[in-house]
Length: 358
Image (tube, rainbow, N blue to C red; front, side, top):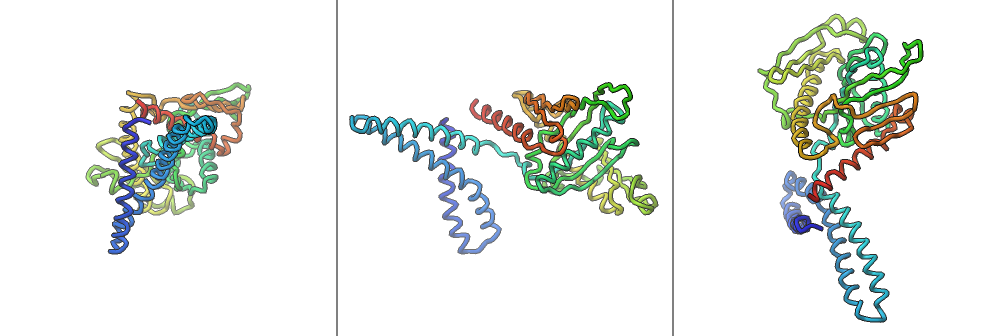
């Protein structure tokens, strides 16, 4: 293991000792805010330090076995102990490296999932509806809550654009690699001669922002328009100006929300989406800089970049970033995304480990 990593682990081990002493003191003085903060830090670094101690013990076991090599009666036993010890050290070292990887501060956040129809007209809109169902089913498998934020249905079904909010632990961590261009190859229902058409949709996965802490939106930078909502909802939704359109003047970002009958609720929801989009722009700028120096699964931030193809005649899905092809398209479209999301996460982790070793 690199000296810099060992130094970091020694530092964390010393910090854990400090935390034990501080927690004893804070427990006595009952300063609950401080106590909770210390407890959280202890919980974060405790497992890492415990693993490091296992690593140190394994190193010591090897050293003790090496001392027995000079004894003819113990030589074979010592050699077996050394081999077993080296294997354990290697496994522990790999686990420690993974735990030392920088954590994405957004991983545990809820997300806004935005799907837009692209090239392909009505077929693209239908595919946008299929993608929404796929992600909704995946959310159900993870017991996440799904909230419709904004929808623009197409005439033949599906959506020209749709935004949903997914609420659940680790939503961003599981779906953050879904942003980009999704291409479908299939025979549309409107095709009379059985020809395969290619259409595309764009998906954007945005971590929900805390407007107060993450994004500072100046009210003077907003233009707020209200209008009558369209679509389902009965007479009321079409008779009042409940729909809200926010325009962020500095960035030109426009957000519409009309799903709720309350103008106040639509405005609050639109503000959340706006904050997420502004935060997303900032993240993509950062990712673009990272992509200039190394390959990144999250990409350069270019949403038009094609990341995946869904080929219905062949029943396959191909993710072009990691060259993964799965012949289980029916299951994938029904929300069985675990194999795919796990493979993407593993590739990203390998990338981070490679960068850590540079």
